[in-house]
Image 1: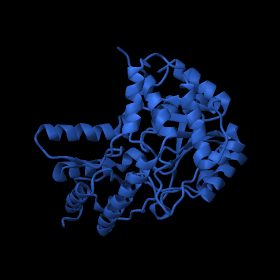
Image 2: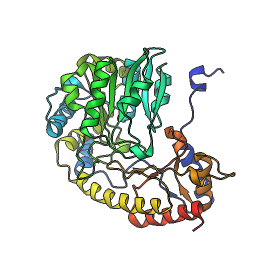
Image 3: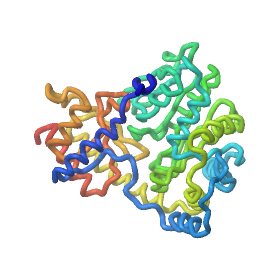
Length: 390
């Protein structure tokens, strides 16, 4: 049997490798705490669950239109009017199996062989692999902790070539939790427009932004220039629906049709009853988000105080639920990089983390604070003992 060459170039998921190792240790009887999981520890709201149950009871279990049921596409369009004051219609929305498939569909629709895609680093783990599968070339643009790991127009311009076609932008960021201001986003958008660069704006965490910071978005830029931008959103994080697989893109109608063609030949439609639940989530109250934000702000402050007490540079994030400290000062001969250090911490402290190398910055390690306060304090105290000996 011969496996395709494109797969030989792909790296395995670092997060799955961490989970596999953690499961092996649990099977041996070890108590393992995971600060590696990228999902809220809250349950899906009851009214959303009930909507799915009602759909099942009503027999809503058949194929649906590839881009999503009309009422969910309309709810996505209304979402941007509700929160960002723009006007969109259901033809501008496509529903996919989580934000991940949205991103994959977009890159497959936009990238030709040899096209360059700019990706600020650190980045979400799957961007480079998706670009590779689309036969594009991922061009990473480095950033620094002292600038909150945010890319500048100058940095983007230095990386741009005549082959640059797309920029993938993520705010709030996974893995850093840092957010661009509206002025920063607007400046990047204008640079992209001036240079014919299409922006994929990954805004999956847009509702998880902490006061006094306000969510920044390219929604208004999209309204003016729909041919130059697409927005990516999902219910996975904001409504604790990671397993429901509900993501969307807001894009020009032509691009939505192109993505539908890809999706129609790959996964067809999203789960029918999940879509019904999505309508209720988007159209209803968002109290669960405010409750989560209160908890996440508290946990962020707890984690940030402990991590910086180690002497590690670590921007204080304004969104999502991650911290991304620079820990290379603690690397040793037996743990010379982020992957080896994560393995050491897992073995000695029983805490699962994700190496920064998976996100394009081997100096760092990602910590998720989507666990309860006591578990978070205990886990970080154990990590600190491994790193500092105290």
